[in-house]
Length: 105
Image (tube, rainbow, N blue to C red; front, side, top):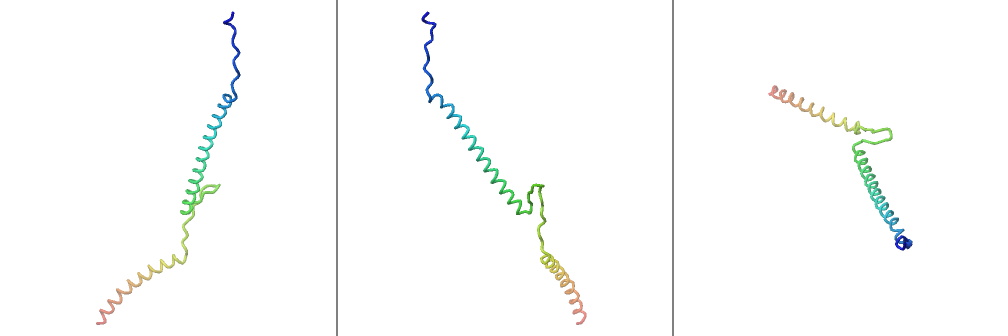
């Protein structure tokens, strides 16, 4: 039975054994690079959003979100109020002066 004997096959070469390992490392490296790029993008977006919200007096803390009120100094508030009062006073006293001048003539 000459046809029943199998020829012994040559052992696989080291290169053919290493190729699947190299392909696995390439795929894992590509996935790691994509994951790192996503991480860097998320960190940049988060920092930019935090900065813009901070400019609007909204601060993110571990406890939640803290919203600040825009600071208005007392001096500015008094100046604006006094300017309206002075304008009203001048407009009101100007009418009285004109009628008083008209009566004197």
